[in-house]
Image 1 (cartoon, rainbow, N blue to C red):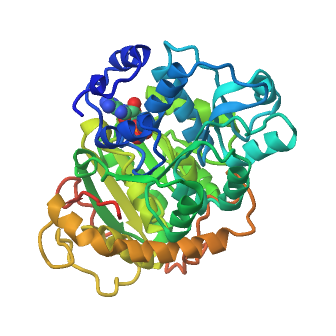
Image 2 (image 1 turned 30 degrees about the vertical axis):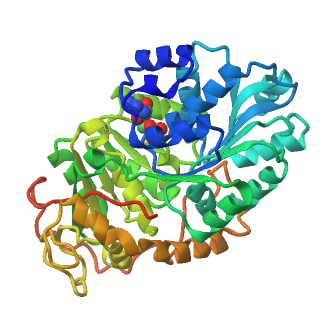
Image 3 (image 1 turned 90 degrees about the vertical axis):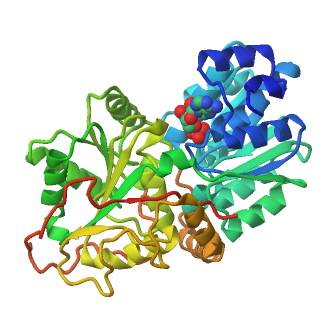
Length: 474
Ligand code: AMP
């Protein structure tokens, strides 16, 4: 399918796509749209950035346009579940953008804001409801919503739902859906718990899978800077001042850490804002808007808060802390190099984070070039050459993809572990609770510090970077 016209979508949808300047369907759209129009259940392996939202929103809107019935009071015809408030907001925006010439009643049901407006928007029934799991269950419990009228159910970012401890909520929600429905599940990875959920939820699903667009991820230049934990704030300020930064997204592992980094940057005369689960919805929206509009050039975020942020023109991603879940590294650096732009990802790695670095390099099947010094020599450190595990040069997507085959097993095992850890967290779509912490390894709060040590060098950007593309597991 080379054109949206080939799918047979309703004219008002095509008109909206023309206005959005969408010309060619992305691979996930080309595969998924015909299946959904044929009323199949679908499992899609795809990350944010591949165009997956339109892949499900367009056929759903077509279904609504072709079957115009008034939704029953306190029901919705389409239910989309997403793990975070930001992602939910973006999904709703997409439905409204592509459906702007259809008369579609849609709303958001997310935590962190009062329930009153959401209850009112449900009174007359909705075509499309985009929700986070916790708030959805609250609305059901307070008799503001029944799921008996759901015709299409979408579970987006299923693996992230698992990470965030939502799996039990999702099972509860699925149990309330009518048996007769179309179900779609999207996930960037397919750990065993998610595969199992899919088997329970979907009927004879078609599977579609795409790699993140190579043109996007391939262009990310990556570098590790080995540095003492105590020297990280200074190193971060230096990097931001030295690099040609248009817009930089800095990642920390915890909410507290994000605030601390912002204070450190401000002290060094760099204006920065934090976005994480402890901020109110209004604050988060304002900060994101300022970042989008270029009023704030440095945004410090936790993994969960950054999920779903789709801001173009992020020139740099800096990992102040390395993520303890290796897949998060891929998600994080994918925030840069959007829309065909070049992107730079720099990770500050202290000695205590070396196990995380090893996990990341195992996942991406390559060594990331390194500069700087850690407080202790890195055991078995490789020279900063761009090599894959077989000693071959990299930057060749085909090679990366072939090398990536064995990853599934590792993920399955991890999926199980994560679920276990999250059990008992209960719901947290407020994601201001604790889940910005996604522990796989125990992370020491403060690493044993030998005091600041001089940094050997900070090589200029572009001199010693790895450029890779990643392969999604099948
Ligand atoms: P998603 O993966 O759904 O978050 O989409 C990533 C970005 O790609 C969003 O900014 C979309 O507006 C954009 N997008 C999705 N499909 C297309 C398309 N066929 N042509 C151009 N842009 C697209």
